[in-house]
Length: 209
Image 1: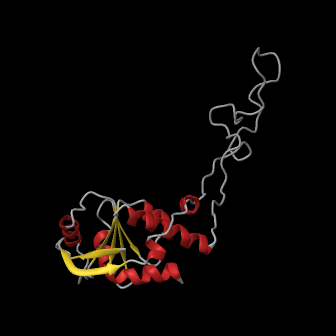
Image 2: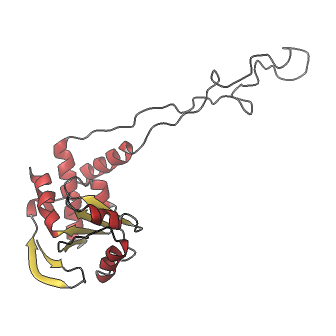
Image 3: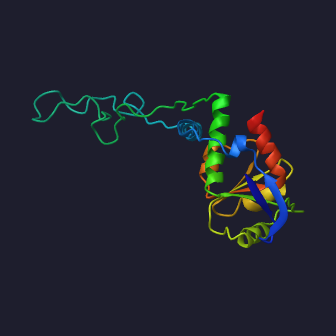
């Protein structure tokens, strides 16, 4: 598959890049995509949820009233789970939600996601650019020139583009990530994948090695 390289002003250059068919033209494995997304979302959970159970709630040591003779139900403590202010029955406790996937499965899921995006013409290759300092205004201008304003964008960059990352992180619906370790979820959770030309090699190497 061949794609034109775009300039930052939104016009096409005379340069064409060849995308590896082993990455961008494979038959997608939808089950591995499902597993990769499920694993990513599960690993984002902190698992710090906690409620107090009956033995942890303060107070309630004294029996509120005598067992018999009042004409009402018996009660042993005001901190019963049935009472307001009482402990929670089988409440959540801290736990880990971490899931793991085989490395080969992770790579195949990422390849599948890229193949889907390539098939739907949702990948744009942008010429190399660099900012002397973080400038959100300049980043927004590039998106307008490419007619991408308002869309969910994932821009893949290389390690040495920290100013580009800082320029795009404050723009709504825009995510800037390293091409070498972006996740399947991030690839699918975008309308357009904007790949900087110099980031193509790290992206391919991370999936083929």
